[in-house]
Image (cartoon, rainbow, N blue to C red; front, side):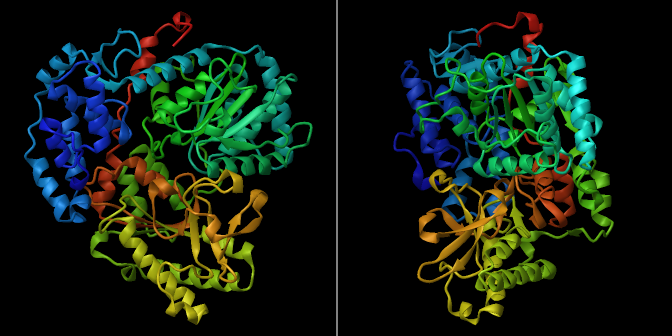
Length: 628
């Protein structure tokens, strides 16, 4: 926003700040990096500020030859322009008049700058680094180097378990699972053998492909193959994902005999696993104090940022195995980096000796149109996607219209679903049936790509709130007298911040179940139970209405309504569409134009990363340096 321009933003960087391209933080950090090295050239300061912006938006590098085109697409996104106020529109006009540096001259100036280190320069001497024509912040360049080196080193290290021992352990576990009605497919069996054979392995697959079963098989096979196996750690980037991993492993593990099963295991966040000492204070576990475990399993790895992956791998000690689990087709981390997607995309070119990846493709949970549609999107098959959408299957409804021209009333089945769920949750909450009300919370979600504007969460949340109030009023007439902002019995809510002391996770969803003497919320507890807490005690509690696709990542719901942005939106990517579709278990309503669908399927995420190049540069694994 133009009213947040840094007072130090002058000259060329200042004009980019007035245009809404750069934030005050971008300007201040860039100026600090340049002044510390005696650099006064505005072009270098602008490059530093734009690199900060790239990191803020998820990319770890800035390409001077492409940055103008990238930012133009972002700034002139029709969905953003449609929701812009007078100040934002004025900033857009300033943006249209910006004079970008010539890329060739810009790169030449960066090459000669005292603020910019080169590829072979010592580390931590300058805040910026130029490598193969790409500008990095030093921290992220080092993180990329570390991740590439440490993954290659781990993959090259072979534990001392013979193939015959691993196969015998797999046969024992497969027989036990077969007795419980679970048959391992070849890819799941391969995943178990690879963990025995490698200190690093990756397990990739979409919803329903059996990742949890494969993880349980891995744990059981490793336990049988290595009687001296030490502690096992389960972790995920978020508390909610960690809780799901713990419960899912316990559910499958309970089907195995005690002598074969993995036994009771807890799961935690990656931050907690590494022993976070607070913001900016680092972690207790690092290369000098590695993790005290024999196996580390990280779920939802697509949500893991590049710096956090570097810290995790750095804390892996001698003899510890690492299994990274996730869906590479989903949206990448909110923070900078796209590690899992880079690993899986690079694996076919580099081979299993560099990146041992097992991809699960068989859908064990269900077939049907939703699974068919998600697979067609994942593979980028536009014609097949349109065919499934037009087939008229009852589990997939395609509303081929511009969402900006629609209201919730124009989607009568969705409106009826929302009002019906609100009515039922209000009745169950009023009857003190907390568990029954909680079961309905994940029955439906409305997902958007944008936060604001006619395609965004803000607008559709208002329409959802009105429909929910109508549904609650049909059961509790006093609801009509309430104003928005008051807690109501039967109202679904979401937690937006981890509260470890209360065992409440960011993303936990609940239901308001009492108003007096104080409003109370029912939230899920470990093992599928529920518990009550005062709403005032959970400070980040908010009404559960429309969500961004990113916020819904890692969860699934009975029915999902997806509002697609216009086709020109840079947020419209294959990863966004795939993630949105795979949130639905039983029914999907997709609202958007055909052009938006086609554009989404054909346009992959453009987050910039150099990991694949790093892996290729490592070459012969026998010549990997001892230190990153």
